[in-house]
Length: 206
Image 1 (cartoon, rainbow, N blue to C red):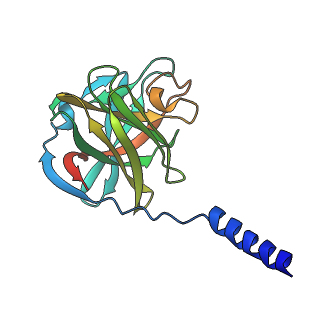
Image 2: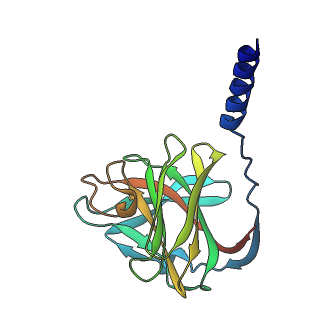
């Protein structure tokens, strides 16, 4: 009888020891500290890419077609340099829609090479394909939000360890690596974009 009782005690003790407790992570809260003015899209730098007005609209904003002019070389748009605060969190976002030839969008917050955070979004499925950072940038993340009628708000966040940053973006495809989405795609990719929606915010993450 003692052996049976001892066996039961050992089983209970072993079960308690190996019981996995669920860890509930606190919800991340963000406080916007500064909304940073982004230069008008006519000032964007462009590398083998074009931006043409269309008849499409998102609410009261005209949509533009962003299309690669090459399928063998890097292709992207880049904002002018933006002064940033070292070791601070920044969030960039833009409203886009899948194109006629592709449905993938690449987005980057970049400091001095190779410091950067990259994200690729699938505008057909409405998902984040992946996020990756290089060298000194930290805490990278991305999200995609459906706005209806196939329009999506794509957002990328990272801790910037640089005094100046650029926003780099453009159409890509599923075959490129996350960190090299702007490279050769072997096809002429395009998407629709609302240029005025490009935004950058310095935030406090709690």
